[in-house]
Amino acid sequence: MEKETQENQTHFAGFILLGLSSSSSKFQGFLSPIFLLMYLLTMLGNLLIILLIFSNNNLFYAPMYFFLSHLSLADMGFSSTTVPKMLQILVSQTNTISYGGCLTQMYFFVVFCTTDNFLLASMAYDRYVAICRPLHYTTIMSYRCCLLLASGSWLLAHIHSLLYVLLLSDFSFCASREIPHSSSSPMSSLSARF
Image (tube, rainbow, N blue to C red):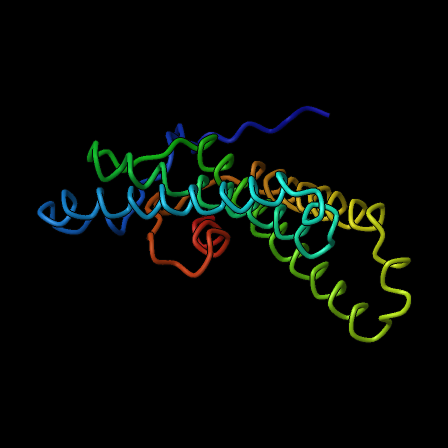
């Protein structure tokens, strides 16, 4: 079968990000150092948590701290997904993002968000076992089980995110290319554009 050509298609260059970039420029010089400081403090705090847990073997092999180190790693990635682009927009005054860049940012946003949720569920399961089955806790929550829960969290998050991005990559955009910065989720702002 031959592919049908679509004659009324225009070349798609990317998206225009609204929100902080559309506010008055006098606040942008004030906001960028504040957001940079908050970003650096977030990265430093999470890095310190990871280093403290990895430096002490007793903490590293304790299930709650093991999951906490993975949660800190996911939080570092989650912050690094959106904040650098926002800082670049505030500093350079260019508020566009390419289609590939938007899909990449959405992929990692969904990965780290989903990983956070799965890791929090794993931590809840750990507390459930500690409270309801205290005599079997060390047998049930072995290091192997914790490793399986953490790696399963990361793997399922990547599969989940890949599904979203692959489905979005086939869509054609014919409405406005503007994405409001204050939308409830990136999926709702993109799905409204088809």
